[in-house]
Image (tube, rainbow, N blue to C red; front, top):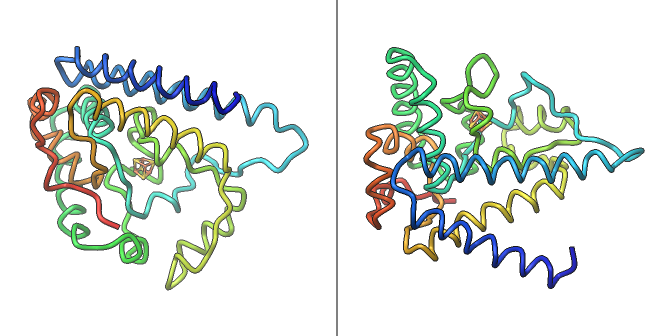
Length: 231
Ligand code: SF4
C-alpha cells in the first residue's frame, strides 16, 4: 500500500470500528468485531509469510510458551472478547478455576513493572499445559509475537535480567498487529469510549465478573479504570 492508501485505510477502518461499537449492545457484539479484526490481522501476516520464500521463517511452535510469562497489555475490547470466549466455552467449574487463577496472578503482579514481571517468570493465567487456552481469542499483543530464534526466547526466559537478551521478532507481524490495535483504540475513542491499555489478568477479572461490565463500557462508563497498564 502507498502511504496515502494506508492513511485512507486507517481512517476508513477507524470509522468502521467506531460505528460497530456505537451500535453494539452486548459482550457478544464486541466479541464479533474483535474476532473479525483479529482474523484480518492474522490473514495479512500469513500472506506476508507465504511470500517470504527463501528467507528465514519464524520458529514458533505449539507448546513453546516462553513468551507467555510476561506482562500482557490488552484493550477493553480485547478483554471483553476474551471474557466472552471463556464464558461461552467453559463449564461452571472450569470458569471458576480460571477466575481463581486470574485473581491470584493479578494480586501477585499488580504492582510489578514490566521488567519485574518478566523476571518473576510467572505464567499467564490462561496458559494450560503450555498451550494458550483462548488461542483463537488471544490479544493482538500475543498475535504479534513471531520469533526467529527459540534459543534466544529460552535465554531471555531464564536470564536474571530478561531484558538483557534481545530476541528477534518478525517485524511485519508487529506492524500489522499494531495497526489493528490502533483501529480498536481510535475506533473506541471516536465512539466516545475509554480505550486505555489494560493489564490482562486484572481486566479479565472485571470482564468476567459480569457480562454487564461490557454493557457499562459500551455506554461510556469505565469499569476497567483500576486495571490500567503501567510500564
Ligand atoms: S493470552 Fe494466551 S498467548 Fe497470550 S500470554 Fe496468555 S497464554 Fe500466552
